[in-house]
Length: 320
Image (tube, rainbow, N blue to C red; front, side):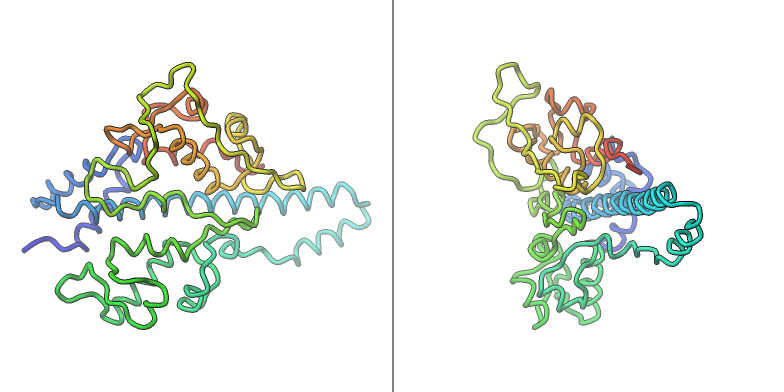
């Protein structure tokens, strides 16, 4: 009897917490699980890819939550210090009392994703992290027995789901269809943008191919040569208040993007725009990224879809 998807996903999740994301690959993960379960999982490549991408998204959400929390704490502490320096000692007690009365900002309201009207009606929330949206979708599907009995990867659309999804729907196309209803909630810049990782969603089961992307007119060979027409990353206007919103960036990242502050999802989006515009995905394995001269100021080779998030983290300056 074939091993169930649940068994594979459970072991994969545990394995992802143990391995080094900078050196592993989907193939290595699959082969490890195959050896443990003593079963060929070649036909489960899409399932493994989906779970790996979901895990990477969750890790990014956690890092963004930590960054936002640090920014909130730093902002509150800075305001308290500024008030203490500019007010006479006679008003210290009043200032301290106001600080104590000020309720702590709930972390949940600062994060999550903006939802479409259809998804808001379905979930009863205006914003929610993407991973939580997917979790609640599956809770609803399982509670209402909406998985096809003959093939549980396929999902039956009832009247409520039809308002959000188009048939046919399965566990692989769900994430892609949800992208139209889930937007990154960048409250500090009041902007909406799809998470770059969502653009990497793929229904192709070829383990050596990257998720779908716009075709570039010419393939670029490894190592940018002098004289090549290198497209610059799009410059984003800074906020009129001078702070620019988002996270404080390292000097190399500031030089690369042309701004001093930017939210992490927007940073990742602009990085991927630059990579694609300059054909810096390895034609032999598009998960691998060619580090040209400009990317070399930010990243160390080898660079791929797995470790780009980890390598970019030091360029976000916490507490500033």
